[in-house]
Length: 503
Image (cartoon, rainbow, N blue to C red; front, top):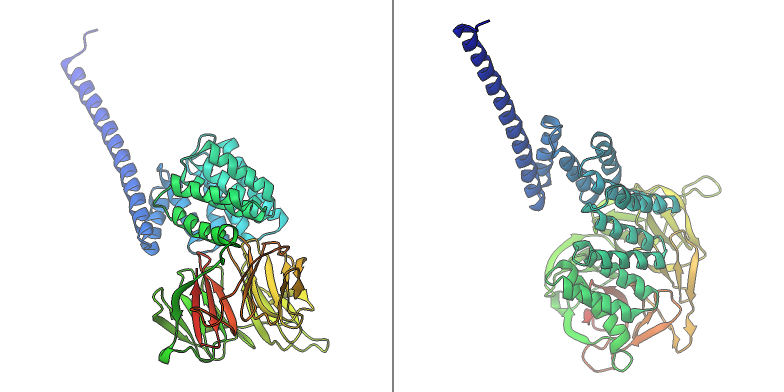
């Protein structure tokens, strides 16, 4: 049968229309995908500039308008990471991670979501079960997503989880595997830093120094290289400079107040920016790197200074805490035998990884544990008149007992790990007044005219630092001590009413 010209024309028109529709659909899909990707790039640019509000708007818009795009999983991962690292809201981060795993289980972001799930588990608490769950999540990444960019990240955080849980040998092994398998990965720089901490705690400071030097050589110009230099300075002072030379030397830097004196000082501290905070009867004054006043927070009779998990200031008054030195935290103390609320007389405070407050109570001679909301949980330690405390990243707490003049090291559950008596081989604590820990867990004890440095487990005196009378930087009646990120000493001496800096 012969096909008519009209039939052929109709067929051509139909084919042309179909082709046009297909092309339009393809162009539409491409433009939608491109726009979603541009929105993702926009959100990341806002995040990089720390404009989190606008960045979140872009990421949420992708999830609402382009949920089937190839970048929807990336937007969800960005939001979850923000909730954990910036907002510090593990519960919100956990919800987003679960959403990602449900909606996009095989996407390219799913591997990093497993890493984030492990980190969330660590942020939720530090029980054995939480450590095991975190490590399992990290270990699962290489098994399910071999070759993924998330693998070196999972190896690093797996090593960190092992280190924080006290499995030091396992941590060193995990860090070593990452260093060997991914020598140029940015996560390797972090692994070298953490490996140095673990090696120092294992009594191998020489190997730790080598690891820190590798960071400087392999990753020059990075923040990790700067950290490695600062930490190497700490180890150099304690293990190489001493004992042939004094571990510390006066820097020539002195911090003074109006009129050349700091009056009525109760405590000093160094924040995350290496500013020096001085607590007096009526205020907490902040001094910058050049020793000039930066700011001041009015506070009535603070007894001690502390920082929360975000590095924000906490002032300790005898009857309570003030967050950022301003907002009172309503504490709900335990009840006495007759049902009345126990009267608190606070001396100091530290905050653990879960955000709980550990408060030194002079009245009960105990260290009490409170929730981040201020509700009493339990007695962390009893029969200790803790004047000063500090805490490390393993949640180990060191406390100075003002009555016995001894130092006690506790694990995260309040179990005594070591007691440093007032008198031991080659030392005697005559009038200890303050205590501090560095990144490696070394224990620094201020004893008026000297600073004694003990090993991280308290078993060995590493160094005793003093400055001879009538020489620059001499101190003889010091009652407050602080360390900065490079392990420099800040000592307030009542004899000169000033803070002197030693490096």
